[in-house]
Amino acid sequence: MFVFSLLVGVLIAFWVAGILIDYLGLVGMLLFRFIPLPKLKIDGPLPGVSVVKPCFANNDNEIENFDHFFHQDYPGPLEILFAISSERDPIFPILKEFLAKYPDKDARIIVSTSNDAYWNKINAVRDAQEKAKHDVIIWSDSDVVVRSSYVRQMVACLQEEGVSVVTTPQYDFRVDNFPTALKVLGNNCDDATFMMAYNLLVRKKRVALGQSIGFWAHEFNSFKVDAWKVLNCALADDLALPHVYADKGKKVVFRNVYCPVEYSGKTLADVIEQKRRWVMCQKYSVGNPLLYLSACFFYPEVPAFFLVLLTGASSQSLWMFFFGAATRIGITGLFELLFLGSLKMWIRWFWTVPLWDLMQVGFVLDGYFRNTIVLGGRRFKVGQGLAISPVV
Image 1 (cartoon, one colour):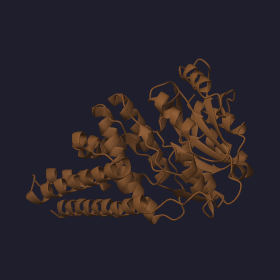
Image 2 (image 1 turned 60 degrees about the horizontal axis):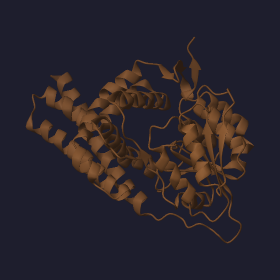
Image 3 (image 1 turned 135 degrees about the vertical axis):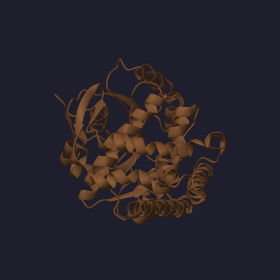
Image 4 (image 1 turned 180 degrees about the vertical axis):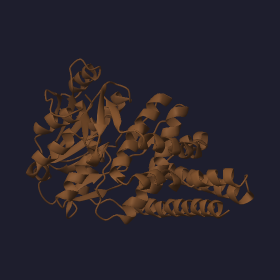
């Protein structure tokens, strides 16, 4: 009886903690959304900007995504560097068409020749960045969709006193099937809760989101040997880069610059594989195995579900489950409305949010018992600091 009561008490405590985090994230989300972005300072020469876009295949509506970058309203010098690993990549002819379509724009294709990093994205980004002309560097993934104000707003954020790196939370859109709905609404809910709570509470940030990272080239170049050494063997460039900056005493900030990610046409296997990589990042970022295992219990539906099983579906446990699910679903809808100006995804797929949350138990257990991952057809062992090494 004592063990049963203790277990019930622990599950209730996790549920309360999860609910508190969700509502703390809600406060953080509202502040993040409505605090205005800084204005671009144009009282002197504007810094030049080099947008580095690593490109692979043509699976995420790249034709539309890329076009936005040729219509930026930034009044300073701007170049776009499309970084690819091979001219045999299906994206190469599409890029050639863009360069022909906009001959007046400063845009180039950089074919990577380096082989220093364990995966091709880092090699491509490095080769492109080494050829960049300007002092502001923006890493921008090929699946992002931006507005004409994107570069101007990124630069304005970097002009803030003491800011070295600016990033924006990664939220997804353009759901077109059940697997993508699982990932998109689940990811957006986590952004609206966990990421917004983190942004609200943590002053010295060591996280960036890889779809959009801006920084000053002169600062990066002052420690670029150390930076590339870390990035070359990193599982997640978007986690490794801010760690390097934070270790150098530099400031990383989240800002509300519109930059959602195109996520459609994916299979359930694609969604699961991407999530498996992310939980590996979480596992080694957290460090403590028990703390990592507890992560899934901060989704309030998870402890409530176990309470339902333990108590024979008592009215209290059922209320806790549905209240937790309703909270997460409601916050997800508000997030979509505030940041994407729509409720289309939420109206059709809201019910996937608690399902995705319950699936975290399986994902976390999978990450706990696994220490290798496949990247580019090669298997790597993941170690502390998200460093990877080939499995022979």
